[in-house]
Amino acid sequence: MPSRPSRPRAYTIPLEPTLRQPVEHECVEGRSRRISWRNPLGLPAPLTWKQILYIVGPQMIGAACIDGGANFGVACAMYRTIKPQDTITMWDIRHNTIAGDVAVTVFIQGILTFVIASGMVHVDMRHGGMAAFPYPWPDTQFAVVKGADPDAATSRRSKLWRTFHQRHGLGRGLHFFSGSHVNDIFDTSLTLRQFGERLFWSVWKGSVLSALFFLVWWPITIAIIAPIWGGRNMAHTWTPEVIKGVFGFSLGLAMNPLCAMIALGSEDSVRHHRNEVHAQNVREMEEAPPAMVTEAERVVRPRPVHYREGV
Image (cartoon, rainbow, N blue to C red; front, side, top):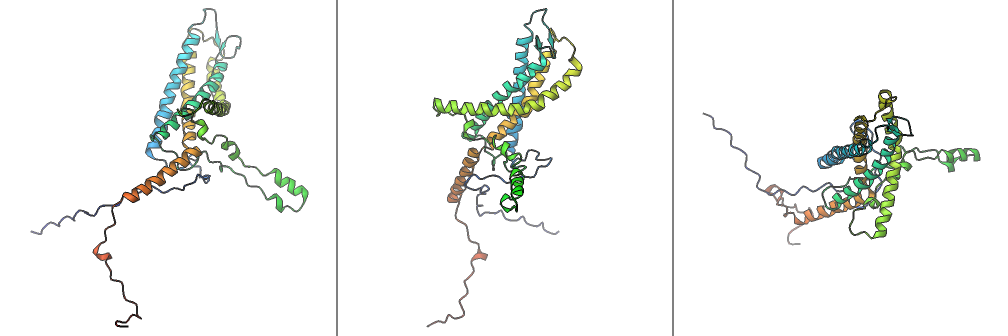
């Protein structure tokens, strides 16, 4: 009866620690990343599973549920306490109007979302609960349009034409949303003046982002609800509350993770994360055991041909 093959001996030599992926020390502009269906926002992929779950979980689904519930509660306080003769319509501005309500909700919820989400993400990164992106985001090199060199023009008219067409595409606009330390408003070491400055800039960025969402979210919402409830009186029904709750949920589902990703891709957070990774690599290399030399690596160095004994 043939004997069973023996199992290979276990590897007894201690393995060297697997170091993290090295990164540069300085925070530089990220290279333009290809937009695809897997990465439609041009994120500095690949993201870790912890970052993905953090964005999708508390920053997307969790925040959307909170926004929807808060808007539903506010709508109940607004519309369930009206007088019997009051009306709630879609467009009549003299009374309670749904179109005006959702328009105001975009800006109020958008500003609060940017201020709170950005500040809380910075708190999580400062306490080590979440790591920043490996590169700054949004990528200001996205959609850069390179025009012809004006200095190479052969005529004045050509130079003016080339100078006029020197534009940066969406990069200049995206640079406005490049997060930094000014969005970290929950730092307890801030003075009152520093807190006021950071709060101002966070509110200003949140207002601009809310205006962009208003151009998309408000027309889509009106196009959905106007054909159904456009000419009806919705007073003393649950329709206004449901509309406001669903609207707040959908707005939070899209806006809150975007604010969180802006904070994760801020220049200061990326620079701090790279310094931490570099320090961790150096510490792991210093604490690693000495490399063991195997028998095959003990090779006698050959003597040079000009070497002679006794000379």
